[in-house]
Image (tube, rainbow, N blue to C red; front, side):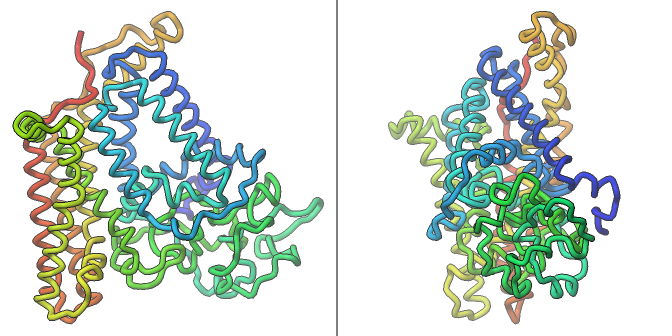
Length: 508
């Protein structure tokens, strides 16, 4: 099934549709910033904290798992960046030594720590300043460096989207590989300058009129410098059709990693040879081939580390809200004498680094022993770590879904309060503070279902990876399946604990 064959979906790939989505998201960001700075200091009654930490996170994970990376497609920061690039043209390329995911993985870990340490869900003003800081960081990076450097190498939200979208049921792919083999312009990655005045080009010929853009074929796409003056709208004009800024050459693109679902490649392709196809979720994580813009996953320990941070970060983020976590921090502060920051730091180092590394090292050692392999433990661990993605997505879905559904109606009284504060009158009626959402106990079976589905996906993926690389796949996959079971049981135990209802509207 190709969703872009549906006329309505295909219309949404147009640049006007994307700009409209980005403008709406940008307006929403402005509203949240103003609400955070000028609204009530009580987080459960402030639009910035309620929308940011309850509703948007739930919508994010649901959209990722149901469709794909639609949030990056509507990213308001890219609208601001594109406006900024009309005045400031970036000239530098992102440093080669930093073309990996280590910075992003560190930022995700730091963000999770800051969320807990500063109680960001309880600070409307800090939430507003965080939104402003995020826009400023994206603008600064992409006004200095060419391409989509912020998206590909820095943005923590983008990395979360990239990894989680590997479990999505749809991905952009070419329709006819033979058409790409005949292509002489490689517009999907280079982009297409605007047609000269009074020029009419048929789709098959569009983009081929410029004699200065002759290339030898798709094989040259990997060597083509897309940052040359003719490569983007800042150089070629406002109406240029931009190619993929993340360097994902469609004929050799595999899955959704690093794909923002911006549809630039779809608009740039003169042959209309790119579709949004249904596929088996997460199967791309077991694909052995070299993929454009990424290489082979087995040779990318930085992406494997990103997966570990996200998978165990979801579990740690949920655990930090429980009574046992609070008791553990209290013991470290009172009995050992640590400060609150040090106690929380110990918890995060253990949950994001020490414990995951110990479990993964044990699984890799067992796999090497059971298969009589001579591969380094690091190589084995890198290959199988990707199997944790479905389980991690299940944990995030259970956690974010819990907060979104238990607070699904809180948007109503909070919006009523915000409208009254801004307009001076209760145009939307008096706030109905009794409106909250689904009772927490009702959601517990659904949360367990999310964990189990994720665990089943991870268990199947471990076998797919082992079947790809090992002569005895069942034995090779067994330690990793045990790791999946242990992590899933830990997630279920965490969800069974009393959990703080952060950011919830309180009657009164």
